[in-house]
Length: 230
Image (tube, rainbow, N blue to C red; front, side, top):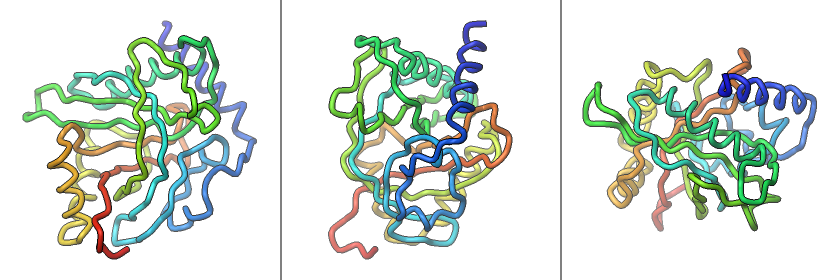
């Protein structure tokens, strides 16, 4: 019942914001295959599109802060994301040490470390992008921690509809396939070897109650090697 009320509150929040255009999506996002309408209404992390390929694009994200859950062990990405999102939604509603309400942002991201088998639990960390106004001093909260990202690069694939446990692996595999043989793939593998705690990231821009113009993304993060052409 409590979870249902929280999700309803979230839907109402997005409805109130639906007519706002805050101008927070950077002009450099013109390379996007699909513009996430949510980012006309609420703040999103800024980035520059540096390359558009066949089925993917390469972005450079500015340094940023994310409030993150502890790793959630589950066989379902959808269920783990729901569990983590409710923790983060309580956080922005004032369940933090400063009792401070925080504006909703997008996307909500889920870092995925897959299990070794189809019936084993994977590890999921769900994160909320901290608005710029709060990044100097984000309120701490029990059970959550801050991730501070330096400027980083991401290979990105977009897809529409609802994220499901059945389609997410297919989308991640499609991104990997589109990158095969590129310098970007080598940079991604190097990043994974140095930090094996995350395989890929699922970024979701929409409320569960939005049925149209849904935009989701797969991110593969990496560091740009000196001499790699962009």
